[in-house]
Figure 1: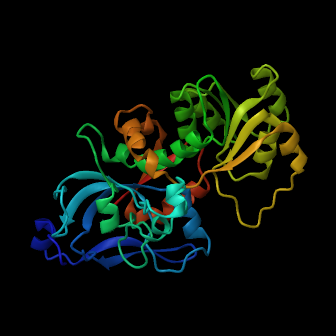
Figure 2: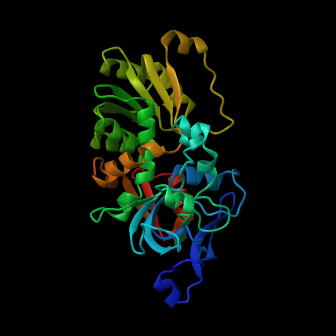
Figure 3: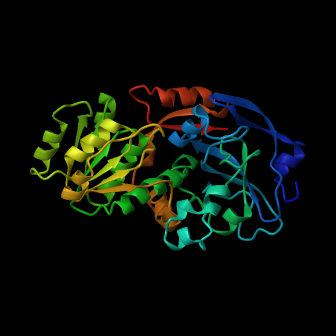
Amino acid sequence: MTANVTSSIVERGKTNVKAQVFRGVNQLSYEDIPVPTLEPDEVLVQVRVVGLCQSDIKKIRYPLYEPPRIFGHETAGTIAAIGNNVKGWQVGQRVAVMHHIPCMRCAYCLNDNFSMCDVYKNISTTAGFNASGGGFADYVKVPGHIVENGGLIPIPDNISFEEASFVEPTNCCLKAVKKAQIAPGQTVLVTGAGPIGLMFIMLVKYFGAKAIATDLLPSRIEKALSIGAEAAFDARDPDLPAKISALTGGLGVDITLLAVPSEKAFFQALDSTRKGGKILFFAEFPDEVQIPINPNILYRREIDLIGSYSSSYRLQSLSADIVFNQRIDVKALISDRYPLKDLSAAVEVAIAPTPDTYKILIYP
């Protein structure tokens, strides 16, 4: 390596570490890879925990990316080595890692569309091969651009690595909440009470609004209520729009957050959102899905359709504040913990969740 390396790696003569390598659709290989080599402006982080995200699962299950790659991006760990030119960081520091940082200069960044920035999309943390997050490995390398522009966030002493791994997904959800302009006193429908939907419920409540949740699993309906939803219903209930109308004085919800890629959920949202309201697409739909809609519904009812993808650099500090000051209870979202070697099993559970499956964390 061309940078300072932790003595523990050097003393053991360790040149290889473990990683889950994506070798093709539904093919994960737990194998030895070289310790990432650092440039003078880069940092090496020993991964302590990484969250399993639906976007990771999508990348593993579908032919979206050429192998080999190492995914995983909701990463928290300890700085294990620093390049000779790195300032302000020390070996041993505990950090949450942001896997993308925008350039702040392009037309997208100047319009706060940070996730559309080419630098944001193409420069990422990596454990080897094509840079793809790299969190599903013992060690992940943080490029100089990310190191120098706020992509490492110090973890307070009273916050666990598990909690810190939620900074990135909190940012993604917070971006959606801000784009939808959720305000105190409003009522928000959250479709889907999985880990993302539950986080939405927490954030909606934190910002002074009321959440109504839907899901297919009775246990998730109960979970939604336990963390602060005003009401929660079975998504298959044919009387759902009528029940929501009754709860909102006949008006309908101000905003719907689509946290599941369901065509049925979209039309429920359309039936349940008030005139002048908003529907935000957060979950990514399969590319083959086409949703037919009469544009006059949007025109006459003045419904805004919004999309929200990934995180916002602008909200990075607020996301860290919300997690580190425990303004929402991210620990309540954790249901399963798997060692890195069992990532394939964790993915299977996420695809076919048990009644008590929420957020899954992976440990190298």
